[in-house]
Length: 473
Image: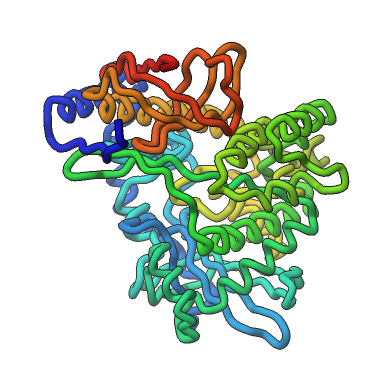
């Protein structure tokens, strides 16, 4: 049967999906809004005036379309033979009183959660979507990072301070990509491609790696929900490089002072690397002995089904991410293996709790002041808080996608689909459909091989539980 575009218009399936998503929220005890005392404290909060005024710099933001919780803004300029980057980060510490109601609520949540039927924000909207958000045309306090880069992206000097800023433009990814592709030299992102590519080259030289696999996203469609598999635009990678640059600079500052919190990931051991190398040979895309795994993964064609199977196998190399707090001796593990460098989270304080600590610690160190006692005393609590919130976010994302998949497929029980095998797990084949963008598994046919095509038949789809069952055709 020829593939057809799924259409989930308002219907019985749609109402069942809404009920199933609501049940998921209830089963996970996700908070609905904020307590009155939290809202009252948020509405009364005001940051202290900063010492610097950088409103003359025309900052700009790049975020997904429709975003209002804008954490970062950039100003990019040439400086001699290199670049000068100002990277402003929302001043969440200025709006949150340590130990207050907003602080306690944020520690309970850990991070903003994203669900198809609405997000669960880390902070009250009056802060996260308004007063702290780097919205265009309004004055905001921010932690402004200043980087001097050589033409090849090598980092020279680094500084960070609180300052008054004003964003001039709010861009989404497609709009920013169009400005760069059109060669608009007056746009606020005119230099982002040059800087981003230079920093990617620095990542290559360090031996860093990025999977950059297509994202499976839940999107609104005709009043309902749909699934899309989207490959990130180049501008998203370039934009991410500014965040990575900042996080690596923050890690260096904290390690130098002997206090802070890192985002860590252990390097894959020899056994895992050897197993992955054997998988690449079996898939027909062997990983050469004289090439780093970062180089190898970087050159794979994301449009090739076999390459997608390789990337699926490579995900086994990137495990064990966590947080390491320290005060005195550095932690036993300091590296983020995928980046091949120490790294810290400091660029998304509206949406992620730990970033508030990183900003406060780094700014105090650079200014030559003592790290605030509240931040120092609570560093050790953060790894457990963030681990719990990441587990919660992972469950919400996976179970939400499962319910949307079931709703998209419910009226197609009995149909045959052509699927691409991603990997074999024991006697089962993990595969993905092209349309709808569903990833599932079934008993592996005898001839199933990663990267190859198989025929599968849909046997059941239950919206309430998010259960989809396929068999080999």
